[in-house]
Amino acid sequence: MQRNQSRAHFTPSLLLSGNFLIEAEQHQNTQHIHGGSVCILNKICSLDIMRLAGPLRAVAVVLLVGLTWLLASSILGGDSGSFMKIFFPGAEEEPTPEPWQHKYKCGLSAPCPPKHLAFRLVSGAANVIGPKFCLEDKILISSVKNNVGRGLNVALVNGVTGELLEIQAFDMWEGDVSDLLKFLRPLHEGTLVFVASFDDPATKLNDEARRLFEELGSTAIKELAFRDSWVFVGAKGIENKSPFEQRMKNSKSSNKYEGWPESLEMDGCVPLRTPLES
Image 1 (tube, one colour):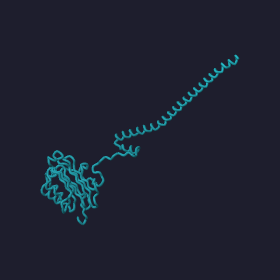
Image 2 (cartoon, one colour):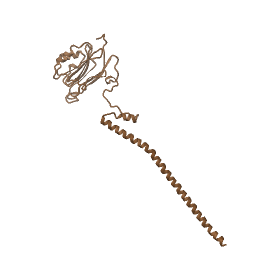
Image 3 (tube, one colour):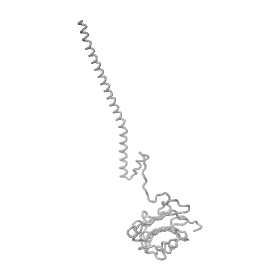
Image 4 (tube, one colour):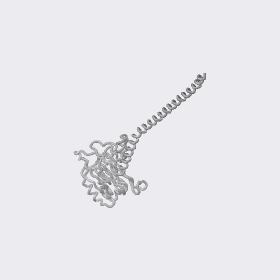
């Protein structure tokens, strides 16, 4: 009986010890599993960071190259837009607006008919900016070409071929009007005459000079006065008055500049003559 009692007393202890061992093992397994999870998560995070590091480095390199390119272009005066086209093909810079955008010759809004010359005339602005002549998309007279002068700027063009014949400027403030007369008297029939004023176009004009311009088709020449703005296209032997003429009167009440009216701009299509008409 004593042995049985001692066994009976000992058995629960073993069971308790066994439960304790089982619980301990389960706890260790749980810790191992949890630790493994942490380890797995750490590895995943490390892999994610490694995967992101490559693209981030690439982006940093591209930005560095781009900034270097832009800096070099600004210093050396190169085209920074080429970088955008290489790395971002869809990105295009807006073109800088320019006067007389070349849709058609000399910036006209519509093309000229066959056997016509496209032209644009701009008179001088005060005594600062010289006149500008464009014929068939070629600049004949401008301040940039350094062939403008105070007074009347005149270009002669062959009325059959459209070939430029001669360019002259006549000072109508301090010059000699006889130079202008010698220039206009011997014109051949059909010669086209393009005129634009700069500063003062009229002080030295006499009756003969005004009559010669009338014969070329001008109507405003009779009243052209000190510091008026004037643009005109005429022709030797024209039957009617020219449709290509503008005049802006010098008036203190309406002048755009101090002592001068605003600049005038005129464009159009001048018909060429056939050889039989010349």
